[in-house]
Amino acid sequence: MNAQKQAHAWLLLLPALTLLVAFTHYPAIATLIDSFMSTPKPNRASVFVGFDNYAAMVDDPIFWQALRNNLWFALATIPLSVGLALAMALWVNGKLAGRGFLRMAYFTPTVLPMIAVANIWLFFYTPSYGLLEQIGNLFGLPSQNWLGDKATALGAITAVAIWKEAGFFMIFYLAALQGINPSLREAAAIEGASRWFFFRRVLWPLLMPTTIFVLVNAVINAFRMVDHVVVMTRGGPDNATTLLLYHLYEVGFKFWDQGYAAAVTVVLLAALATVALVQFFVLDRKAHY
Amino acid sequence: MAEAVALRQANPAGRWLDTLAAWGLAILWILPLAYAVWTAFHPAEFSAKFSLTAPLTLENFARAWEAAPFARYFLNTTLLVSLILGSQLLLCTLAAYAFVRYEFRGKNVVFALVLVQLMIMPDVLLVENYKTMSKLGLIDTLFGIGLPYFASAFAIFLLRQTFKGIPKELVEAATMEGASALQILWRVYVPLAKPVYVAFALVSVSYHWNNFLWPLVVTNSVNSRPLTVGLQVFASADQGIDWSIITAATLLTAAPLLLAFLLFQRQFVQSFMRAGIK
Image (cartoon, each protein chain N blue to C red):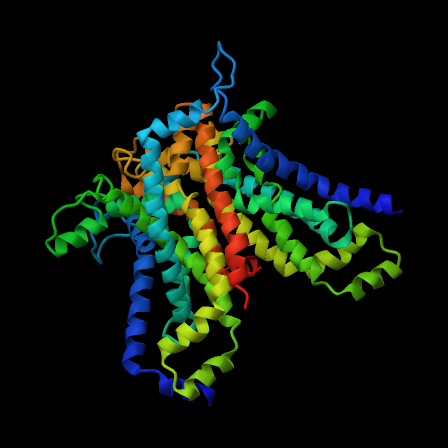
């Protein structure tokens, strides 16, 4: 009987588990192995090369540039999108005029395909007749090629990412705010607490689990969002907007260098694993009181 | 009463500032879309010129529709998201049920292995998954685009949470009546989890409608390209940078989800909320 039940359980699990192993666990391990192998060529099979791929990666200035860009991208998108999301949620949850419109406006970018909105933003940034240029002209600012200039290109794609993500994160804050007991606010009001005090001493601690959930997602997304790079800059000018995943895409599917691509994937996996471990061992403990 | 207390506390100047900032941000947020709508519905010469007398036109949509096989792309995307959603609902329901209703050796280890996918999404592993797909002969097929997503750790997690909250009495009653394990799943668990299924379906459809990098890598022909990849091929091909047509194509791509969102706003927002609360 028990053996039969066990068999039932495994049968139910089998289809999902097989696919998960085939497309998550197996490729993760295969990547690690491939990162120590040479890229197979038509006349030469793949051979063990030790740390050669990693050495090539360390010697590749584009890899370092991609890593640096990605860190800047993460450092800018994470706090700004989470901060804006919180502000949006507080506004939408409050009693401002036109709440319905506000919520719709903030959330709309979430349901639009990144590939579509990137095309719109591309037009926005276009020199000489894009909208940004026209607004600049009104104020007599000099012409600026936002995506073509190395100094502004990364900032320009970062802005798109923040715009896309903030409304999505707002939803989670909104859900949390709606779960907070209204009598807390009444009590604070009767005590004469200032809004800032109420936010800092009551709301912020209560929102902590949400903040951690959102932060983890923001970090993962910072290493995963590349659609807009493909549309808007293709990593240019001069690799100023190459992010790690975009670099991986180029190495893997433009240069077809599998060994090197595997090494870059391992770096990305390590970054994601670090996030997972930090979440599991540090943040999840802090979130409960 | 309580409202009155809270309101008296609020500083009117602060409230004004709040409203102003909230609206400013909202307008900034909606601006790209408004701009795209303007450009797409007006003749090309008005694409960057704003005039109330500019004539409205559907010409840009007609030209975009003719310039690329968008009908085929729409069909591909629709089939793709249905295929993925159908498989996810079926496979993940069965898996979640196994975790809730059965005790078996290694249950916790297996569940931990499932959760790994929450952190390591198929996008990051695209080089290896591409190799697997070419071994299986699934390059440039809709099935190949969808396969890595058929089993979703997120769905399993979400359904397991929901199934756990279903009262034991209902299950026991069904067992007394002689219902089999699968009948209990179908008649008790699935109907009670309906809101969660709706929530997951909306999140999954929006995700896969918009997904780009993996489909870009595994497709190379019109027969399997989804809308996102089709749009990119269209926009990056030499269109003489005719923004009116590109924005029209862009709006076409986004239209079904956008319209669904505008019509069922509350449902969408609540679904994303439900899916996010662990």
